[in-house]
Image (cartoon, rainbow, N blue to C red; front, top):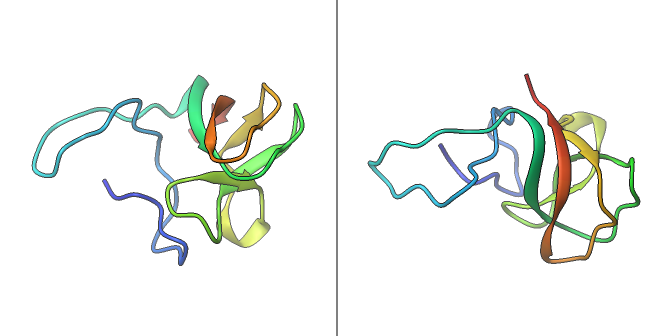
Length: 88
């Protein structure tokens, strides 16, 4: 598992609901309500995907970077917000 970089290296496969130390085991959430680190201030219902300029954050979806889910709470930049994941 790697933090999504600003230059995409692969498809998003899930969101880690807690920090997973290198060499440790953990699980990734792929569907349902989750708390995600958000770039910008996306509106409720906005399609979200990996950010292209903030590593580890979600921002407004760009087709080339992929779709992760929809905002279920008004986004507050550089903070956690509700997202309904639809990765699976």
